[in-house]
Amino acid sequence: MPIELREGIEIVADLPALYIKDMDSLVVADLHIGFEEEAASHGLFIPFTQYNHIIKVMDRALEMTKASHVIFLGDVKHSFSSLLRTERRDLTQLFSYLKSRWDTDITVIRGNHDSFLSIIARRHGVKIIDELYYNGILFIHGHRKPSGNYPKQPHTIVMGHEHPSIKLRDKLGFYVKMQSFIVAPMKNANTYVIVLPALGQYQTGSSITLNPNSYLSPILKEDVILEEIEPYVIVENLGVLSFPKIGLLSDLLEEVYI
Image (cartoon, rainbow, N blue to C red):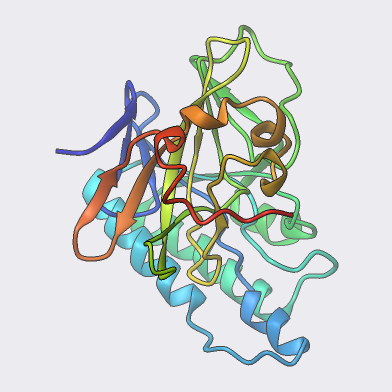
């Protein structure tokens, strides 16, 4: 049975993807297409496998859900300052493939890396917006706080940006790091935040900790009850495992202080 994080919002198998039943939408975050070329420009040479990994995950998720709509929660591309050659090529192929193979509508929630994305998106009928509100669910990237311009207070915020992972250590100091969804209540609001792990395979993530200064998103830094974070960890060959709230895991967490 799929794991439901909130009513009507479920994890797709053991993938870094959500399916929103009411919207018939598949949601993924942080593809970071072009990461390999950007890394190479700084002297770090890694295999150009990001695009093939993304297609493999998207195919499997769309085959399982038959979703008519795909929502990318920002950072579809990687370079801040330009549109790299591989970004132009792979984004063109990605949007064309999803439209032709799966007949999906595509919406991108603009992330902080998505400069120049509109050059490619408009040619393929891809909508780019800063926020998407639907029936009490607010979709954002997560690098800044929501605008507040929606009909009523959302009961759920779905975001990316953080690339959450959980790093656990044993008494000997050995540790393992695993991608994770996280779910947490917000302070002073009847709202829960769901953060997706990154779809990009090289974006292994920020460790979940009890220290607000270790987070990238201002929402997690300031507005979430950190002790109440519930990790849903993707474990290779096992699926998704529900972990206790991190307030109960303090002696196991590999803390990262900034």
